[in-house]
Length: 357
Image (cartoon, rainbow, N blue to C red; front, side, top):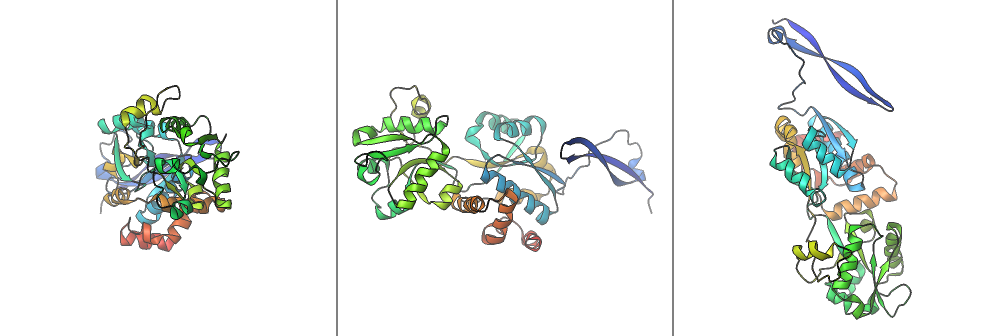
């Protein structure tokens, strides 16, 4: 039998208001293997899961996805996963430059194209699942009950033929398109598209809702009275989980050159009609170091895990109605959507996760 010695690895432990507290973890090594050891080295978790850091972004869908990942990795694959708060640009930059955190579950890549491109080119990042399977969506929406009653209305041009179906709040003889608050990129885009499609010539006006709350209130009020409404919005969101909306087809193709030249610039005087992207790409990213070191089963999960806008919208609507945290939402999702998430994991992992709920 080999003799063993014990060495100690120091790890940071996080307490509220206290940083830098250390704990010791005893690690048994073969005496033979220990001979000649001259420097401390971090414990490798090659071939296993080990400690995992997951970034939780500061919006609801990303928060709940990070919590889902934590539960699945810990309960299904025996990881020691923890969630840390972050935001897109600093998180991806830190992953590229410092190799931490290990996982960014929901990254809207169009928000950080240069950083993502550099990280992939330098071999610091690895892209995994397209986590929102049908992509994030921005655009102009109408209530589902209007779309159901008027199936002929599918495009912006179709809407502009019927101002009477989408009455303005102060003048029902006019139609209205509700915009977001000042400061949002899509508020500029909506104003430019309103001009590009010459909506005023079709007796429409652009309504400034003043705030995110004002925009939400306009949609909620339309639903309460079953009125027609055209509004800028996006998905996934809790509001569209509560009030189903249908995104309009612009009726013209997306013109990236025009989009960059004028559509996105408030001071551009001559916008031309253009569509919007079919969807915004939303992916999970991991550090290349983590992808190389962790279990293949973990990477298989991260390369498989994806959910639809409809699924996320319904989950966020439940979270909002119940004032639920990301962790609460994750547990609710795992209990009520086994037909979705069990396809992401192995049967053994699914059994362990189910047993933990």
